[in-house]
Length: 180
Image (spheres, rainbow, N blue to C red):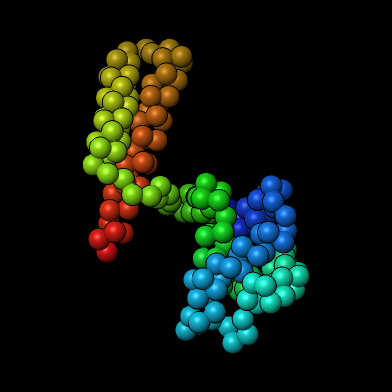
């Protein structure tokens, strides 16, 4: 199992293949200040990154040092930047990062795709119900001596059923967040 710092580093490095180093560092610095992470009660006395525009070259250099190094200070700085990194990464990449770290521990993170109205909720529920029904039927129809192909087909239906729950879970999580 990889540490959260390692998973973070890998996600950031793979994102860097799509955009520039400076873009990544500037976006993280922007969210660091937007989220007011430098004002948190347990924030380090010295800010981890400077205000965007003040010294972007230094921010970039420092951010990439924190990301690449394995010292206790670098790890601590990256943990302080974690919320900013999550907000900066494309949502799908951030979800992959979190799930890569949390899945082995028995947790799943689902993304929130904005507000969902009742029509969307009903569509999600109908899709989940259809996929679940197909999975139940596939398993019930397995004979005592089912072939490997039949077992694989049933497995495929079960996986599709399981995956159909995620959007509905995200919808309910979003509703909880909106009311919380």
